[in-house]
Length: 358
Ligand code: PHB
Image 1 (cartoon, rainbow, N blue to C red):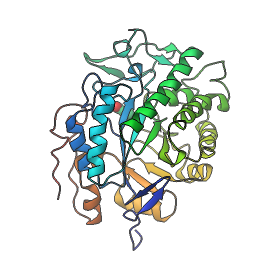
Image 2: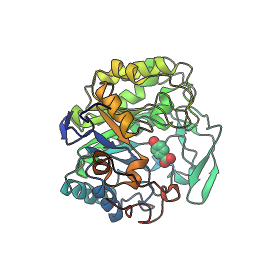
Image 3: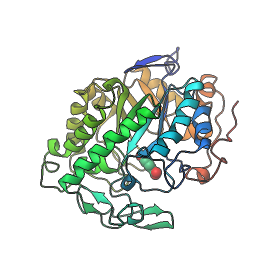
Image 4: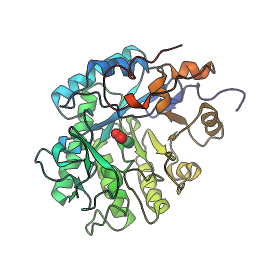
C-alpha cells in the first residue's frame, strides 16, 4: 500500500465533487412495497451510508415489465417518485451524494410481473439455461421470453427517458444505466442472448445500438457529467455468454467514451466468473474517462488500483451492507462487521438498518 491513502482523498467526478473515492455499489435489498414504492426504512438505510463518496442506489425498474424480483423499487410512478424523494433528502441532509440505477431485467422476469401476463421480453426468445426466477409465490422455472418487436424497443427507450426524468424529480444527483449482469441491455450486447437479424443484432455496432439509444435518451434529461454506465464484460451471471467478449465491449466502451459520461462502472469479476476477458487496464484505455471498479475489492487492493492509476474510485458492495460507517472503519483500519446473507433480500430492519457503527 502507498504511504498516503488515496481512497480517502476527494475527487471531482463529472459534475460532482466527492469527499472520497469509496463508492457504495448498487445492491438489491427488496424492501420496497409491492407497487415498487420505496419505504421510509430505505431512507434510514441510505442515510446511514452517506459517508460514501458516492451512493449508487439499488437497481430500480424503469417500467412495470422491467421487474424480475419481489419488492424492488420502481422509478416510473408518482408514488415511487415521492418515496424516493424522502430518500434523496435524507442522504443530502447527511452530506451524501446519490445516483439512481436504471434497470430493466428483460428475460430475468416472469409472466406474473408483466402487466399483460405474457412472457417477459428479451432481444431473442432464449431462456436462461439454469437458475430460477423469484416471484411473489417463490422461485419458479424461467419461461421462454418473447423477442421484442422494434416498436416495443422504442417504447422501452421512452420508458428509460421517463424514468431518468423521474429520478431528477425525485432529487437524485444523477443516474447510472445498468448495462451489466445479464439484464436487458446486457442481453442485447452479447451474442449468446442476441440472435436478432435487424439493426439491433448481428454486428457489434448493432448489438450496442440499444445501449447507446438508451444512454442518449437518458442524456436528454441529464447533463453527461451526471450519468454513468455499469458494465460486466466478464460476467456469466444470469447465463450470459459471448463469442468474443473483448470485441463487443471494446465497441461498447468506445461508444460510451464519445458521450463524455461522468464515469464508467466496471464490474471486473464476480466470484463465479471463470475468466477475465477484458482487464481493468484495457477497459481504462478504451474509455479514457473516470472508471469506478467493483468486484470483491479489499481496502488494500483498492489502494493498489487507485495508486497505480488503473481506477479513479472503487465500489464496495457487501462490506457496505454490514458497515454503515465503512469509510470511517477503513480509514481507522478498524475491524469490519460481517454480513448476514439471510437478510440480504427482503425482510425488515433486521440486517438492514441495525448493523452497529464503531
Ligand atoms: C439481484 O437482485 O440478484 C441482482 C440485481 C441486480 C444485479 C445483480 C443481481 O445487477
